Length: 381
Image (cartoon, rainbow, N blue to C red; front, side, top):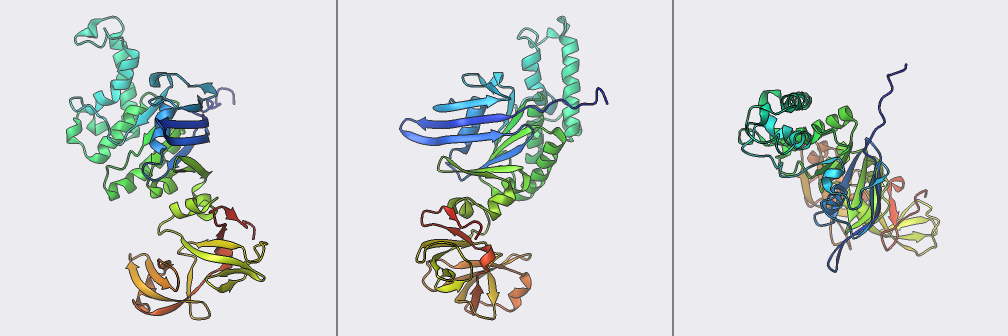
C-alpha cells in the first residue's frame, strides 16, 4: 500500500585499509570492515589489541594514520565527531551528577536545538524556546518509555543503580536518533548477574530500533550472545568476521579458534599418514589429502572429545571442575605440557575421580586441522 513503505535504514559503515600508529608503535594494521545498516556487529579481542582505538576512529575522536571511513557512502575523513551523526556509549556512563535523569537525557538535544543564548538561565521567555523545550521533553519521555526509565526521570545519578545508569547513558544516545551507536565495553562495570540481564536488554533494544550497533568488548559471552556478526581483532589485525556460530565451529586460523570458546579449545600435535590423520600417535580415520608426513595441529572443542571404554589415548584425570550444569575433566596425556579438557555430563561426577586412568577418543568429524603456522587446512576433509 502507498505510504506504508519503511524508510531506508541508515548507518552503513565502511572501513577501508585503516591503520593507526602512535609514534613507531603500530596499533592497527590494514583493517577492512563493512558494517551493514541495522546490523549488530561486535569487535572482539583481548585488552590492548586496538579495538577501542578502532571505535574512536569511527567516531572521529581519533584520526587514522591511513585508510578511509565512510558512513552511508559518505566519507567521514576529517569530519569532527559532532558532524558524523553517531552516538557513543562509554564504559564510564559519563552522566552529569548535578542533573536529573531527564536533564541528562535531554543534553544532546538542548545542545543541538537551542542556541547558546537560548540555553542561558532565564531564557524561557525568548522566542521559540518554549516550543523547542516542549519537543525536547516529548522526545525524552519517548525514549524513557522505551528503556523503562519513566519512574526515574526526576532522580540524580547518585540515586541510581549501575544498570539504571547504563540505561540512562543509552537513552541519552538514543534520543538523538543517530545513524549508528558505538559502544565501548558498556557493561564491564556491572556485576555478573546484571551483565547477563543487560545483554538481553541490549539485544532486544537493537531489534526494536533496527539501528546499527558497533559494540566493542573483550568478553566473548557478550559477543556470542548479542551479535549478528563478530569481528575478531588480535594484535591489531582483523583475523575473521563471521556469525558467532561460524566463528566457533569454523574458525579461519588457530589464534581465532583458541581465543573464541570457553574452556579453550584443545590443540594436539598431528601428522598426515597413509590412512589419514594421526593424533598423538593414534590413527584417526580422516583423509586430509596432504602428503604423508605433513606436520599438523589438530584442535577439538572440549564437548567434542569423548571418554571411552574402548580403544583410545590413555590419560589420567588431574582435576575436575564440577559447575553443576557441566563437568570439566582435566586429563594429563603423555608428552603434552598441559592437560586436555573434556566437557562431560554432570552425572559423570559419580564415576570419575582424580588420579583415575581413562581413554580418550577423537571423533574425526569434529577435528579442526591447522598447519604449523596456524592456518586452517583441509576444511572439507
